Picture 1 (cartoon, rainbow, N blue to C red):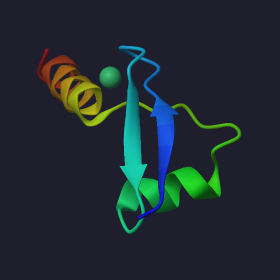
Picture 2 (cartoon, helix red, strand yellow):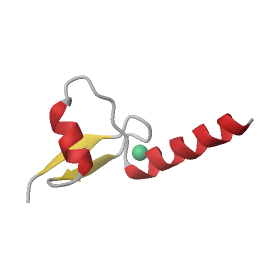
Picture 3 (cartoon, protein in one colour):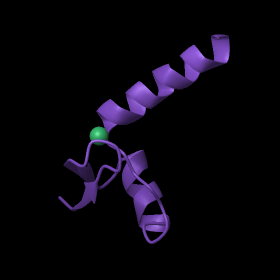
Picture 4 (tube, rainbow, N blue to C red):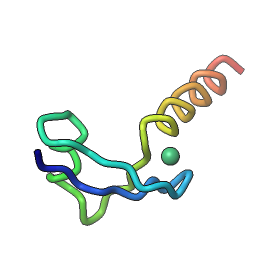
Length: 55
Ligand SMILES: [Zn+2]
């Protein structure tokens, strides 16, 4: 199985993006310029965004 090792810009952890996932396709397409974060962080970011929205 193919995967990329991606650095999370938020928590600086390295996480794996496996072939066949949405993230993998996304990463493959624009890995040069993209900023990526792991599932935990993107979850937190989403929650923060929702909180800010209702503030
Ligand atoms: Zn992270």
